[in-house]
Image (cartoon, rainbow, N blue to C red; front, side, top):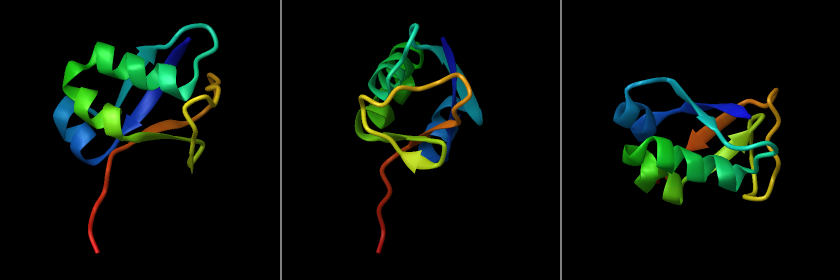
Length: 81
């Protein structure tokens, strides 16, 4: 299944696009989507390795299933005070 992943901040700057599409298998989990992001876009590996996915505007666990109708976004680490 193809999953469209929205990119923000450093991830968007790294790839130069607002979103990417990855093929994450038949019934992908968030963990599988992150793995495929790193495989398809090696420059995203550092961000995908420490970032999290949000599914439908909520942080998702690694084992959460992703459906074709879900809005998926890569959220990198943020800092500040």
